[in-house]
Image (cartoon, rainbow, N blue to C red; front, side, top):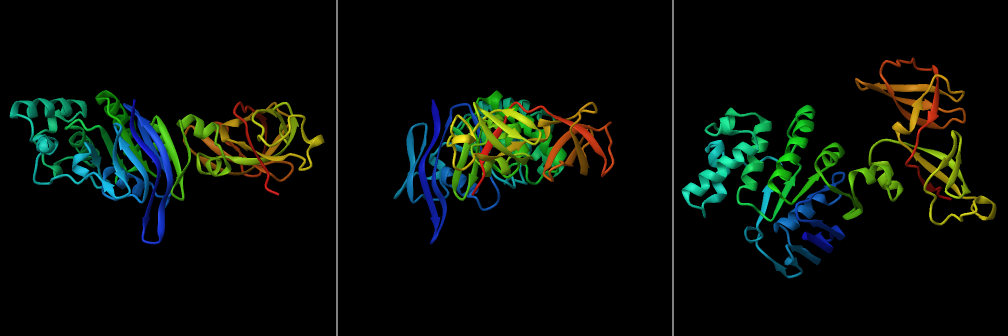
Length: 356
């Protein structure tokens, strides 16, 4: 069942349009994410869903009910939506348990205690129930904010850059923990972030936003391996484009060999012989598509490298002058300027017709 639906939503601040025909849907129990750079409209979209901003066009529905349309905005407090703010917005004069209980005043004292105890256990803070906010860590405060938002059992939970105030190591650990908490609670959630690692660790579905629109709404796996256009291919993960030529029958010739994979739909199936554009394409190769192989006759020069603990990320210069990226186990520590053997190990080839 669809819990959240946006249909061609538009929103402007004066003459500046921020949201431009935004459409997507999120099923009950799923975790979605709006991912994008600063200024793409993702936070404004979240504020429109929460009821903090009116919309100029389209419609927003929660559990099938229209909560925002032009000239009609259901107040935020009536939407049954929970919100975790970027700065958590916790009450410093209240304890952990009291913060979680804040939105439960409609329940009896016994029901409040039961729900708070349940959530304290869920977020792993039972022993910190009586502590004040200054007595717990930033990661614990983030879990308090999450528990407080979940306490009234909202139809939808919204999270605005929930880990931006935390260090990288804690951010990575908490991403997995928060996903587990949301799934255990059966919550439907939408998260806004600029961090791809957070989006991939947390979400079932990710919408990459650009200029107020969703460029692709898909699973994290498909965004990485099957980007629908060059913008997504450039934005998600790391990779390099290698010049290629369509041979037909889903085959593309590159400097590194012939690849079987996706051919742009406007290329004829019999290849370049009957194509006035000669079907020149750029093939997206990820760092894990190129494998270091000492036995390979195909050599590439190490132009730069980045140590990542278990791996090196090598930037390699190919004989033609093109560049490629490769992840190599860190016990293969090669010097800048050294030539190493490589081979292709690509099973998700994506190509885009070269402009011009």
